[in-house]
Length: 450
Image 1 (tube, rainbow, N blue to C red):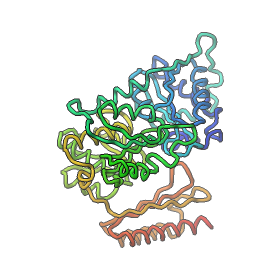
Image 2 (cartoon, rainbow, N blue to C red):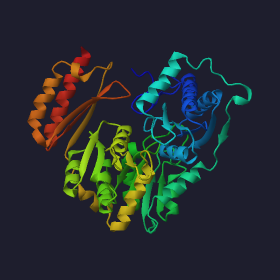
Image 3 (cartoon, helix red, strand yellow):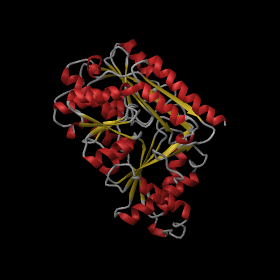
Image 4 (tube, rainbow, N blue to C red):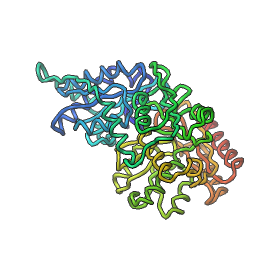
């Protein structure tokens, strides 16, 4: 049983267990112990988003790492993929991200990258938990000149900006493009505007004034309607909305219509297939992606492979089977030929490059796939209950699946971070699937009430 790590690192309300300075210090010590045990070099990168609580957690992590005789490289506010990039670029032994991604400012989290820029596998996360709770590190305290030191990397943003610009085709510029860019008052505010401007775009900037408390608040990928309205107001060619740590992207076309991750994946997969760069002609997505994405891939002569929800599972599948591109409907897009994790800025650049090459607006490119109606509902529980133990629930699901036939599907899964059960129903008739989702939610609520 996991005690700290969820599907995407450790996460919770800042200054409440497990997101306390005491746990952060122990996590830092454990990471240092793991890298000292297995790797030579002994340097760990720490980056963060713009939450007020990042300062205390950053200092606690750094203290824990240094107390184990490992040096710390501090990069300050930088997108999660930027920290993965810096970790590999600096030949560090690990990278730590302090961020709760799209959550409100009250929350925070800790995500860890290994030296190759990929998120830690489950077994290493369990090793870290064991080190923390078994007290195995208690007697291991380097002294005097054996303790580590912390150094600030002042040019980390510049390095990451150069890397991002180099992923954009060198024969093109963004001259003539007007981009609305919403940075969600998060970690991309000091990076993303410069990337698009230096490539020639006119950029209307939103969400670039973080104050420690406004990250993700009524802006960014969680509230793309703000970006979409601004696109219509200023007559821009495209809108790009990032989340708090910059690993997700939601887009709107020139008319202000939202284009989700599924459509972006279809557009990019088609272009990669044209260039013969989509390895094994396969796109990797999660079980949440729309049926329409699979049909679009079939029409292109490609294949869609599905994984469990979470970008880490998408990446694990890609690495294990030799695929090059994948992502999530929510906007995590992973171009493994360029970087090891989801990167919203990089994904925006790849999409703009396709628009430039094809000389077509996004509204036209997005017609590559048609989304089936989809209903998503969350049922908050008083405690975590295994879905298959809910009375009458499996029978209800089976009955509704038979009614949907091959033209739809039902997905029910518990949240990995909170006592919530997520219900998704997909089909051809919006009214019918909404009624089905409501029926399933009612069965769940009845069981919770006891």
